[in-house]
Length: 303
Image (cartoon, rainbow, N blue to C red; front, side, top):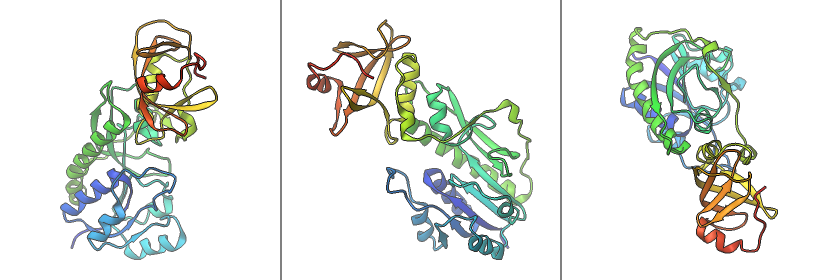
């Protein structure tokens, strides 16, 4: 008899990790996932569709709801696994898994506990992150580590690039760890939270550019929230401008001042930012050269 599994999953990490469990023959009795948000760009694979393809029952309401807790209790799972599920799971639900409840987190824990760890890592200019499988406890991303794998972050990587690489690392972690969990040989490494960090969620409004920061910091923000995320933005003559692609260069200029239009260079608190692709409010995304042709006669400052 195989061990009964309940999976909470969403996004590409959820899809690919669920796919790997199925490849290994896991006895998945129920999947909890989310309804897609109408305000979010859906660029990732559907866990719900994968469950449907394999005839696995799925639920899109929250696992913590009483009727769903009762359903999990009836299944009496050996394992409860969470792969990019967006809700904290209550301790009383975690306790329903007789052999353990585990989560796949998108960072090299204990660093970047909390929300949107990939975006934060890129925004903060990190050179590596990772994927970590750990036991779930009441505190977020704080339980014993089973396995983890590092993921390099190149200076040219966007958060999307990093997320794709992290997804592959996550599958590798699950591929190695699942047989060990089944066999009772998986390690449990205590996490030292004092060696880590915690970050909260981000909203589109958090993408506002502060031109007094350095060119590198501004570049990191841009690549950390560019497509498929909402983007980093500023204003010009009262209109929002989203900067989708840029590059830091050496030079001196007053923060937010347009220093040159060919190339389009803007001053920062330290260095210049070469803007390459951007989008004026209500218009299409364009190259900097096309944008410059449209703004002749405007102020020489972003705000």
